[in-house]
Length: 446
Ligand code: ADE
Image (cartoon, rainbow, N blue to C red):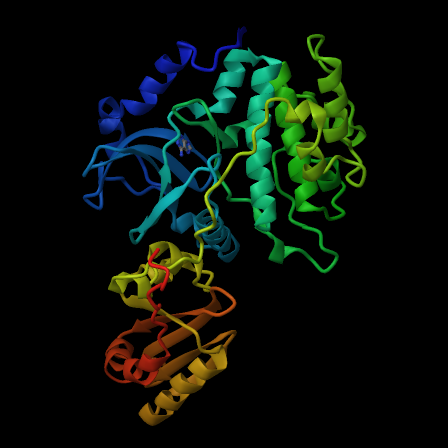
């Protein structure tokens, strides 16, 4: 194993060239299966030219691709709808999309766009040219300075996520990528959970994560604090960066769990006393005494050479000020804000979906829709924060779902099928027209 001391070492260029030169592997992509067995066309929506397979998991495959218009590299995550039909998983994918859409940080992979066919959902992601950090760890042992640099970038991104109520819960080197400057990019939020999903005791209860990185309190199955388990995983990652191998490892799974439980690990001989001391605070098996992100940010070992990373102001709920499109949400939002468990309903050709934003209360909107339904002699069934209108014994249907977007705004999603579509267009739209939110131009001129 060689030790990297220079971040822009020549070994990197040989690694990245394979990722960038997708043309040689196009034929591979043309015959490759999508997230779930569908043959992928090398040309996606006449917009992206698909290249080689970058990675694959149980429900998704990630491909390198180029934007046909300008040749820019992107990564496309193809998720099979077939494999995510089982309600819970569909909810997971939607959650992932919704979460990634909300996060903007220099060390988090950006989600550019979401596309869908009848069989697959495609997430178009920022392409991390340097590939997996994991692959580099397998090749080199990192110097303490370089380990610290990646740990600082990791903590900066994790702190940002936590302050947005998002816990990753599956942090491991495979989810850590590098960009063209060999800076860190976190990806894959498939298992993360938002704060709203905690039980009443404020703890998360899904058994998730990868054994070697899993915090002891998850193994104890007693419920846990998402922030504390991310800190633990960051500790395991820091250990691996410095050592080149895992802190808790054993061919026997029970023996490995026992080591995790006891926080029993030994640092390699080249580890400085300061790093040893720091690691013992991060890999503390007791979550209540384990170092917090706030304490990490103020720790002397951590702070060495750390400059606070500035991330752009949160644009999550910003509307464009001109143009018609500002009133409507795009495909991300369509997926993210739909409450139905089955994603496919949004993209199946027999069901059409449209949405608008409103400042009015859900009760006002539903009241208006119900009044129009009564006039049309349609049946009405309440469903959560929405309503289902049906005619001729459910032969045609209009589904109206409402989700809160900000404190002031809600998103109203309307799904129609059959004659319901004509009815919505010709009768109902008029009834709700004045409820549609029209953003006012900013007086400041920004
Ligand atoms: N592998 C998985 N996601 C990736 C991405 N966004 N860029 C490069 N490789 C990846």
